[in-house]
Length: 214
Image (tube, rainbow, N blue to C red; front, top):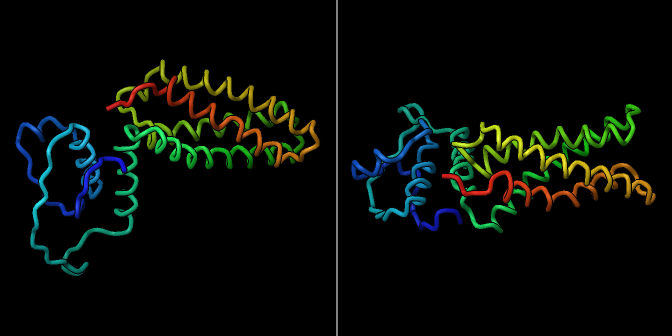
């Protein structure tokens, strides 16, 4: 899906490189996340890969086996971290639906808590949206639009919060519109979040993170 490679066992831990190839790759992972990272970086460079059979004799934990469930989750995270920013647009959008869904859930929970505590819509809607937007930004940088060289740049953050401000205004007006249409707070906020989803993705993909990074 991400690398267009057909490998039998990515996590084999046996890999051989020409010296000039491996010296030109910056490696960040120091445990089993190394495997998906190096495969992603090699694939992105368009290098030719040959897979050969090896002999393997599994060890028990008593004999020194180190891998555990944490490494499995880390490997899955690294697959997304080092590949998602160069995935085809439909795949990126599906991943953003997941990230946006988590942010929308946080947005809804904050909104309901604030309105239940007596805060008005003009306060609770933007506050909940801003909290969800920050959560969304962190996931976008760390998982989907992984820009190692730009993620601390002032320009990137400024453009992100400009997009957030515009979508926040849209979210507020949409929420008020649905409330005035007779919907309850939860339904109104869910529909307003859905309206903003496409605008959020377009803003992040084409304004905040306009290139594929590295």
